[in-house]
Length: 389
Image 1: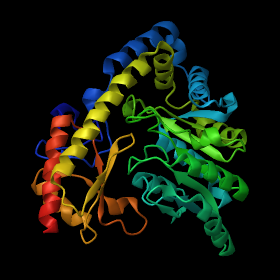
Image 2: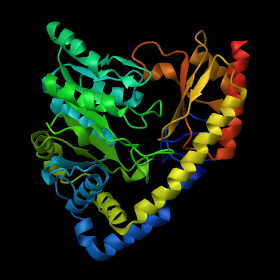
Image 3: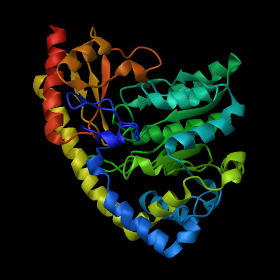
């Protein structure tokens, strides 16, 4: 994807026209609704310009918190208390804020393996050491968690929290089954374990619908839900949130960061609230889901046309990512070198595992149109076949 010269130092994304780089977990700029956001910004500034340009409430604008509460209540039957929600500068900051408060509970963070690799950096920055949760191809095995936690506690190590991406997750694009969701919430309650649910892909189901969030199944205050509009509206808005037990939310809201500067990303949060209220966000999501479905199918079908029998690609349930399983003897880093020679990049699977994972790869289908993804899938499958032989 070509980036105009004048913008090359303004954005995180760096690509070259010669390589279809499936490593980037970012949306195609062509999918970002700049006109809708501009219209919403004009409405907000025209109606509440002085308010939008002021210091915001520490928890974020009530109009966005109310919009989120209304949406969750309609979709999942649970409405958060207003003082349980804090607006943040994206989901990564929400995770950082929660980890900072929870750090005093322990020195360990329990994570899926594979898990979102960049979240590990946020958690490690807070002094937490990741430990893999027990799991299989369907995800975390709740029945095995108590033994892990008790063993850690016997060794003098204490989990501050568990971090999961259970819905259309990064990196695999799959979802934790409903029975395991219910069981995991019950286990967390029994152990007194705080679970942080990264729910950023909920609005992007594939052919079906999103399963109930862990947060919606929790009535004991053991799940913190974090999310954002980065994947479904625009990452540059930097609008996210957390829904937490009221005492934890209060500590974040009343901490030095928010009491010093007021609400983070205040004006952008008011714009997002307007997009919820006007229905413009839902109209945008309808087209976005359809387009991401076409892109996912193009990449997966292109891969399956040329992959050798010893490799496989999972069809995602939703979100941004597909997960490629390589022949057991193959190394993802070696494949990457061969794939780049064919004009395709990706993120090696070992980066998402605490240990192992060399024979896997994460592929993002959000950044390129279907024709480019189909061609990239063919070329990547050819690279796997050539290396396997």
